[in-house]
Image (cartoon, rainbow, N blue to C red; front, side, top):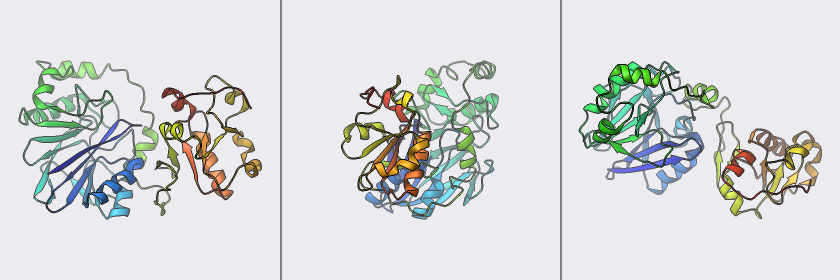
Length: 356
C-alpha cells in the first residue's frame, strides 16, 4: 500500500493519500480546498485514480476540496451520515468499508469533537486516521458543533484505544511538528486521556479549556455542509504558471510570503493600505507601489498590464478585493499576498518605511 501525509501550513491540517500500488486506486482523507491543485498534481504524477475523498468530520478551520476534486477527477464524496451535509455521494456509518484496490478502510464512528466524527482504520489494523478526535498528546475541542466531552472519552476508550497497541495513529492536525503516534503511546502519555484518568476527569478538563472561538468557523462550516461547493461554480481551475499560487474558496489566487520574498523582481507589488498604514509600524515590502484601495479603480493606468501584480494590505482582506478591481480593469495575472503584512512580518521578512 502507498501512503503519503500531506500538510497545509495555514491551517495545520494533514491530508492523507492512500493507494493500492497494483490497481492505482486511491482515496484522499480530509483534503483542503486551497491544496486541491497540489493534490491533483500528485495524483496525476503518480498515475493514481482517485475513487473517494473522505471527511473525518465537518471541519471548522478549513474548507474541503471534495467538490472541487469531484469536478476535476470524478471522485466520490463520502462522509458521516450524521453530518447533515448536501452533495455527498456516500453516507458512512460505523462498520462500513471503503475499498480501494485490494485494500479497504473500516469506518469507526467516534463522535465527541463533533457529532459526525469518524475514524478510518486500515484493514490490517496497523494504521488509523483519527481526524480531530484523538490528536498527538491531545484531542479535539468539544464545545461546538454538537461536541460532547463524555461522548469523546467513550469514543476514544471504546474504539481507538481498543486497536492494537502498535497501531499507528495519524491525526487531522498538529501544530508542533509531530506527524504520528500510536495507541500505546497515547494510552500512556496523553495528558487528557492516558493512564488512569476517568471520564469525569476528562470532562472536567475539557469543560475548562477556555478556548477562543474558531476564526474560520462561520465560513468553513457552511462551506463544508455543501462539501466545499462554492456559491458560484468556478469553471477555470488552471493554475497560472508565473507564481506558486493557491486558489481560495472565495475564488482568489494567493501567493505565500516565502515566494514573494524570493521573487521580488517578478511582479509589481501593489500595497492598497492607507498612507499612514504604509508608513506605519508594520512597514511595507521593498518596491511596493502605494495606491489605497479607495483610489485604485481611478488609478489602474499607473500599473503595467504586461507584468503580474501581487496585492498587499494589512491582513489580506482589502487586497483580495483589489484583485477583483484589477481583473475588471483587464489585468490577468493578479494574486493576493496571503495574510498580508501581518503574515509577512510574522515570518520575519524584511520591511521598509517611508517612501509614500
